[in-house]
Length: 118
Figure 1 (cartoon, rainbow, N blue to C red):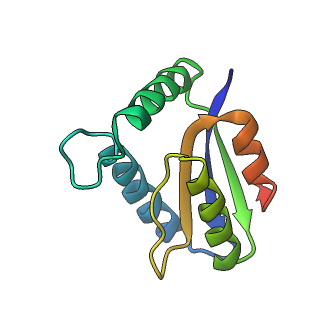
Figure 2: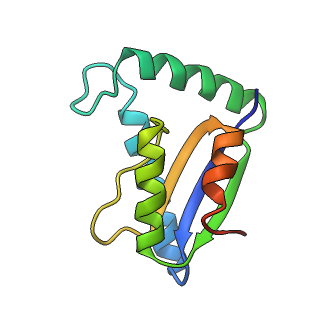
């Protein structure tokens, strides 16, 4: 099995916005897997996340950048990944970055087809 992380960015997003939203997304994702936090994902998701995180780290933290046309596409990808419990940040009304994973590479490649790899 292989895992990687995908960073989805809406076309035309300024670089500083990408940096800020990516940093915040990483912290948000981590907080979902700390027992006792308000938005704890649960014990079974914690176990799966820890296994994927361990493998991802062993694989030198592979990442893929994907550019999507607009926020509508980003929201569709977020919805589809939610159905599979992919670790990711939550989109707000003015988000333009979605950080997802680490998660199964085959599934992440599927979600990546909604944009263009950069």
